[in-house]
Amino acid sequence: MTALPAALAPGSTIGILGGGQLGRMLAEAASTLGFDVAILEPQADCPASRVAAHHIQAAYDDIEGLKRLAALSDVVTTEFENVPASVVAVLEAEGVRVAPNGRALATAQDRVDEKTFLNSVGATTVDFAKVDDLNDLTAAIEKLGLPALLKTRREGYDGKGQVWIKDAADAESALDAIGHKPAILEARAAFTQELSVIAARGVDGTVAVYPLGQNTHENGILRTTIAPAQVDPATQSRAIEIATAILNGLDYVGVIGVELFDLGGSLLVNEIAPRVHNTGHWTQDGCGCDQFEQQIRAIAGWPLGSTKAHARIEMTNLLGDEIDGWHAMASDPDTHLHFYGKREARAGRKMAHINKVLERL
Ligand code: AMP
Image (cartoon, rainbow, N blue to C red; front, side, top):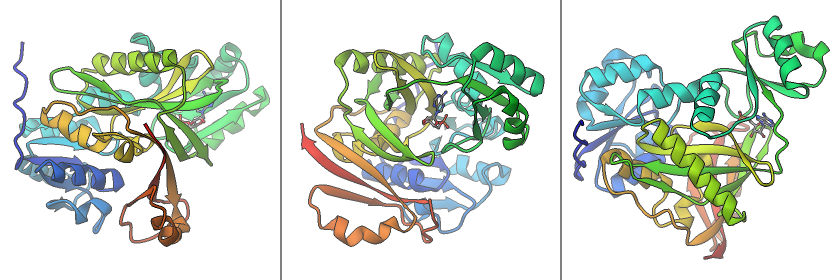
């Protein structure tokens, strides 16, 4: 048996691939625990760069940049899932630990691999079929029925690269709409609500799971999360089982976000995000240890923190110029503001979120 990596002492350095808002909040949490942070991010003046001790300004797959990140860091993590396997390989060849591991990242990057893995560990998904061309799509429609959702296998986010097919005659135009990329056809999930669970696994295999959140989306982008969601105990227990099976199945270290469809009595997994997750932002003001601190604890080999909620929170994402209302929001004593420090409030861009305390628990 290989020995577990020793816990990193305060003063060590955490490396992060990516310097957006998730990187910034990870850097803030790392700094609270006494760590320095090195980010690798091509964009100058990014949200995390104003919090991190080191900013390596390079492309995510820049070999020299990755080597510098590895040299500075005692462990490296990521704020986004589309990290190529070659990047993990470069970092590991430089002798630095990467958490979560390359297999977890690769699994989450491809919707077919992801669903195949999920079903293999008993985390049920919608029925699906791999689609590479019109023949595949015709057969998939036959198998799954309509309506069904055609998605690109890779690099879809916030509802991008997806098209509903309601009529078999629309198969060809649906392939056109996603640019004939390798795809997956998914049966429609007739869900009553969308839930998500944030969970973490430590280097020693300990698992900690937060209460479920209930999510609403607008135009494919997360708008609100209310958590703890008001679900029956059996649903929360099932979510814990699902998250634990996924984390153990991937030999995962760190925080994961698991998006779920509630079918009113059973849960299906929509997708997993191998990182801190937008639907976990409520934990900053609802739990003793939030998801960002939890991620740092997990990858640093520390004991995991408490996932118990002390407040029910409504998290709302603020997009584009919605942050202009900051002054009024700041006057509500039950509202906690989290701004990302982005210089430009482009329409639809995630600029900040607010956590409103609905109830003390
Ligand atoms: P995704 O990019 O997979 O997270 O999908 C974005 C949103 O599309 C989800 O949050 C759901 O609201 C919806 N959606 C995705 N897959 C399905 C499905 N198979 N059935 C019904 N709705 C879905």
